[in-house]
Length: 361
Image (cartoon, rainbow, N blue to C red; front, top):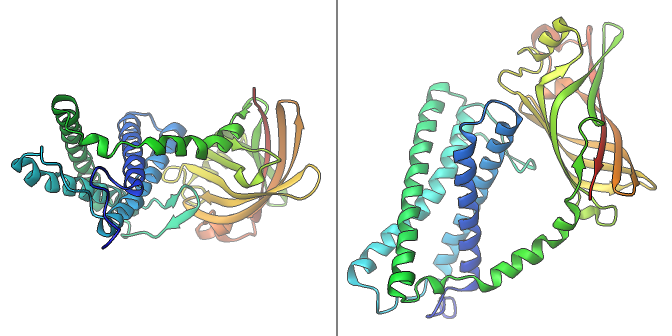
């Protein structure tokens, strides 16, 4: 196509952007993947697995965009210094790399589907299950995913060795054709507003997430013992505000062992299979004064629903205190199975009370 080809002395800017974004994410993907497998069961491991999935799906999207761009704007021709055998091998090695960058995320998506785990991309977009739940297939997919990952690392190692051969030993300028001069500036500029907001640290001693529900005419209440959160918030830039809260439902407790055992059982929260609840905001708006509301998705027992959390926020110097109550219907999340689907003994409405104290330098 006229005007669509990369420059003879280097790749087009779009190709460089897609290449380096993919490269950075793949390095992070490998790092998180190697680190998370040996973590003990807990919120850090669940959080790492979630980010591993999200980054993998982002790599899949970027790779599809790269393939589309390559079809529109073919890579520049190889310089004369490249030998005949290198010209023969290069298309196959690059092709294998692109195939792996597509196959790995899809295998992870298939693995989650077979394991009965919902995939919600960055907590916003719930993706469809590609397979029915199948424990045996899940185990096989885990093995295939691991082999694909090790194959990708091997191909990447060869890719890096080729870079060293061309630009360190032979100095033929192959690597400089892809070197991103403008990308670094673009990343810095794009992240500046977020960095200015991201300094809030939650004080877990003074903060709490509690819940209450009417049970046989009386109110039963409790709290979530372990939870983590990320807060990005500036009253003057609500468009960039974001709340991301993950709760370990195995630590939900009313203080009564029989009630707690029932609450964590398969009839209610099923914490053995769905240990985490997750809230992530999609929009934060002011309702006047110190009153705000956060719209987002709340996931409990693998079921995600749209919710609106009204809250008040008081800022005193470098300290912020937020308080809000979110009423939800437990049956919307499948909490209460069989005889417990009735509301004769346990009410449908559960109130989640949030009190967060945070500070920043």
